Length: 154
Image 1 (spheres, rainbow, N blue to C red):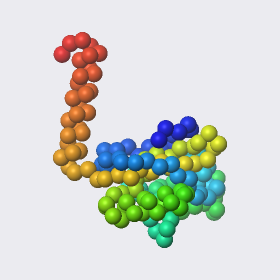
Image 2: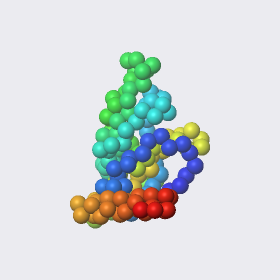
Image 3: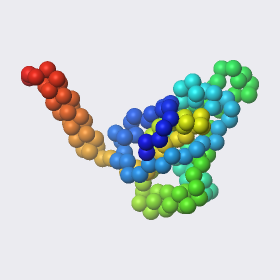
């Protein structure tokens, strides 16, 4: 999904560890100190995932650093956060996750043109080790080809 906006954080290991089948853009329920911290870019999506609980999609293990100026009103950095999607999308995603064993992975966090924080989540299937090795080989080969094309020699 290419939507206009400023990308705040990217989950780089996600595209390496998972085969991305489909992406969705979801809103996220945040506290004020979390929004300010995200605007400063103090968010990490490493090891985070989305889960369907009680008919809602919850973002788990997403780390948002505490906002320094919030003092005692600060948030818990690793608290579960609700993602906002249409009910039919949630039901469809829940069915695919339960039936086919797929995973919901956050790919990136962005600020849209209205200044709202959005999370791009993806429906993904875990890659096997040999698929990851093939991806590394292809990436190295591509890098070598680009270097040869750039210099014009071996």
